[in-house]
Image (tube, rainbow, N blue to C red):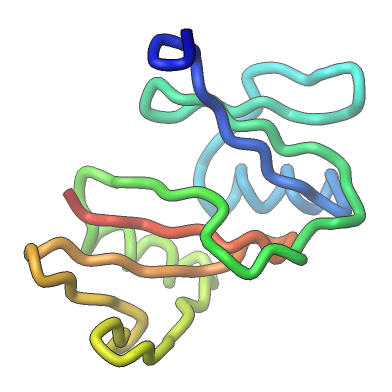
Length: 125
């Protein structure tokens, strides 16, 4: 049942106008559908996510959603050009340098927040 169910992510937004503008201008995404509660559905890489109005936005302290762009370096440069600040952290073996975590298997990851404080990630494949 669940192994074949469609899966989507839901991201809260305290200010839907600001959030929609951020996802359009920063990530280049446009809503594909608006729901009855003023939420906006987006589609990327064959997956969907819902941006919905909620005063709980920004309270999650963990990664809410991840993107795996075709070109990690180009994605980092584009996001930086658009004003995104990448988070740095040091958890022993997991430490970012200039916003980038080098994983033992060669992949790289970087974390940042959207306009609503949701923690997003880009991960090289």
